[in-house]
Image (cartoon, rainbow over all chains, first blue to last red; front, top):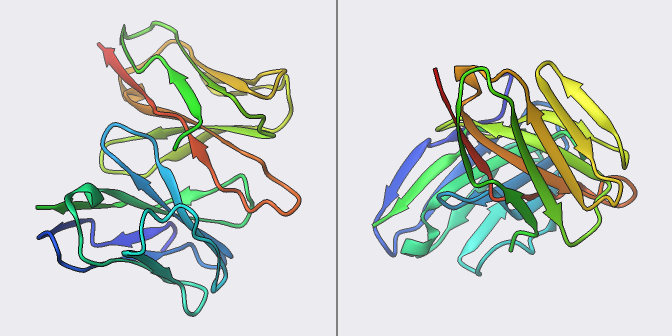
Length: 112
Length: 114
C-alpha cells in the first residue's frame, strides 16, 4: 500500500492477557519507530529499528514490552501480561529521512 | 517524559480568524516540525524547519524556528472548518549519528466554529 498500515485498529484485552500489534511500513523505508500516545497527550518514543536491528529501546516502559522486526520490514510490538496503564494508542512510523516520518493510523489498545 | 511545552492547550475560534500556537523546549534541537492529527488517525507532517530563524509557509500555514533553537511557532491564517484537529509540535536532532527520535509537545486542540 501507499502508507503505513497497522493492525488491528482496535484491541480490547483483559488485564493479564498478551497482545501483539502489527506494523507494515512503507516499502523501502529503512527506519521504523514505535510511539505510545496516551489520551490527551503527544506521542512518546518507545523503540527504533534500522532494518532488522533494534538500535534503541530506551522508551519501552517495562520488560513486558517487546518489539521485533525480523526481516527488516514488518514489525510487531508485543505486550505481555497487559495492565490498565498500557491502555493507549500505539503508533508506528517509518522513514527514509530522519526528519520525515510517516505515521500509521495507530492501534487503540484498551485494557479492562 | 516529554520535553516540549506547547501552548495553548486548546483554542475555540470563529471561521476566518487567525490562529497562533507555540512550543518551547529546555533543550536545543536542530529540526522543528509541526504535525496535525485527526481523530482516529496518525499525525501528518505539515511543516518542517531546519535552520534557526527560518520562516516557512505552506498555504495558510506559517511556522518559524526560533533563533535560540529552543522554540517554534505555528500560525494558521483565515481558518476554515477543516482546520479542526490536534496540532503537535515535535523536535529532533537530525543528522550525524542521529536516527530521528521525535520529541512531541502535548498538543493544541483547535475547534473552528462556522
